[in-house]
Every structure is written in structure tokens, then in C-alpha cells.
Image 1 (cartoon, rainbow, N blue to C red):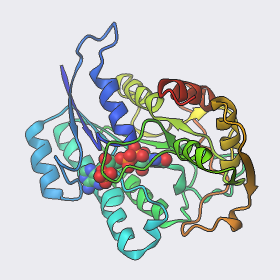
Image 2 (tube, rainbow, N blue to C red):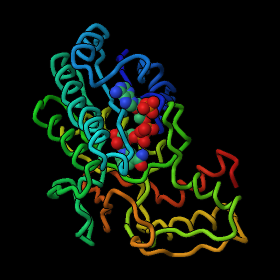
Image 3 (tube, helix red, strand yellow):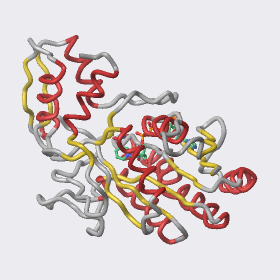
Length: 295
Ligand SMILES: NC(=O)c1ccc[n+]([C@@H]2O[C@H](COP(=O)([O-])OP(=O)(O)OC[C@H]3O[C@@H](n4cnc5c(N)ncnc54)[C@H](OP(=O)(O)O)[C@@H]3O)[C@@H](O)[C@H]2O)c1
């Protein structure tokens, strides 16, 4: 049996990874012993702790779903320092300990490492050029992991949705936020810019398992749901249609009317040229809504 360590296990993605590796499918009865750690068990920015605790545990697979994800706060110098430690340096510590153990290391990154000027989207080898401090911190993490080497996977995703994280600072996904607002307001504005796809956390967790089990070549992978890329306004329209929300007027907004501290890429579709495609995001959205009895 292989020991798999999942870090950030209370997060939106982390909790799905724990499920996927814990539940044996018909063919692979009890293949993994899952160890689920979050902030209470480990501080990934503490290099000595990372090395000591993980060496002692000696997992064969390490998956890092921990991150600092507040793009707007990262624009403040104080929080950028925090983000650089969690998103930038800590992945390097984890990659080092994984390499020393001969373990497979999987880490997650984002479309925000791109500038968003390419309307055709970005494949795995496209040149990164972040336009926000959050993007800079995540790119630093990618570079640290690649510099260490070993058997690593860097998986880029965008616009994660799924059950809210169980962690203290848990953020809700865009779809949950819009559903809540639709119960409170008659009119809702959404930015009609920033074209991208969405990523359903359970689908991403399954695809991560696939990538690891197939022992695909080390390097960068793009995993998002397929479908038609949407702006935030377009995604809200699709959500209200699927969830049967009526009586709320949706208003498309220019991003200039909705100022936020961090710049966002205008076009940041992540092109997947290496893996079997996932289902379209609006199909995954139907499952998300029905599983959570939201519709
Ligand atoms: N969410 C998105 O839309 C999105 C988009 C693109 C890429 N990604 C990437 O996808 C991955 C998963 O994101 P997610 O949304 O699932 O994250 P999440 O829900 O914010 O979960 C991250 C988890 O890591 C924990 N954590 C934070 N600092 C830590 C530390 N120093 N040591 C140990 N644990 C720590 C968090 O605890 P607290 O919450 O208590 O701090 C939380 O439980 C991340 O790499 C993220 O950057 C996410």
C-alpha cells in the first residue's frame, strides 16, 4: 500500500483529494493510506518542520493543495510577503523533501501566471508573465519546484468550484457567492470580461490521481473543465439558467466599473495538450448543484 500525504486537506481541492484517494475503486481495493494534513498539523513555510515531519512520515506520494489565494490582499506588501512564503518558497521545501524520499510530488498553480493578452489561450509551455503579486508568488512556486527536479507535477487550474473549504479562512466559490446574492438582491452586476474556463474540484482531484497513477512524464500540466470559456457575467448567466434562478436582473459590467486591487488576465484559457479532456464545466456545474441540493 502506498502512503499519500495530502497537504491543505481542508481546502476546497484538498478535501476532494482526500476523498478520491481514500475511496477505493472496484479495481484498486485499498491502494492508498491517506494522511491528511492542514495548518494544524504542518506549517509548510517552516522549512525545518517540513523536512523533519515529512521525512519521519516517509510517504511515497506528496500532494500540496495548500496556498494563499487572496489575489487582492496580495497587492498589499504585508500579505505579499505571506504569499511569497506559502505559494513561492514552501513548494520548494516540499519538492526537496519529496526528492530526498524518492516520492512523487504534485503541486498546483494558476492561470494568473499569464498576462492574459493571448486571446487563443495558453498551452503548458507558454511563457509566463504575471500581472499581479499573487501571480508572481505562484510563479515563484513553480520555479522553485522545477529547480529542485525529481518526480514532480505542476498542475495549473483556473476558477475552482466545489464544496466550500473546511478551513478557517475558507472562501466560497463564485457560484455559491452568486447564488447567495441572488436570494438577497433584485439586480446583480458581474464583470463581462476575463475569459476563462472553470475547474470542478472533484474532477480535478480524479484527474490528479490519473496523472500520478499513469506515471506520466514530469512537468507542467493544465487541468480545467472544457466547454466554452466564459466571462464572470456569462458564468452567472449559465448558473442562473441551470439553477432555475428567476427574477434577478443580471447586469454586464466593464471591469473599470468594478475596481479591484489586483489586475486580472483578460484572456487566460488554459489549453490542455497532454491529458484526456474533462467534461464541460456547465455539465460539472449541474452535478455540483444537484449534489448540494442547491437547485
Ligand atoms: N481557488 C481557485 O479558484 C484557484 C484558482 C487557481 C489555482 N488555485 C490553486 O489550487 C490549489 C488549491 O486551492 P484551493 O482553493 O483548494 O485552496 P484553499 O481552499 O484556500 O485551501 C488551502 C488550504 O491550505 C491551508 N494553508 C494555508 N497556509 C498554510 C500553511 N502555511 N501550511 C499548511 N496549510 C496551509 C489553508 O488553511 P487556511 O484557509 O486556514 O489558511 C487551506 O486549508 C492552490 O494551489 C491554489 O493556488 C486555486
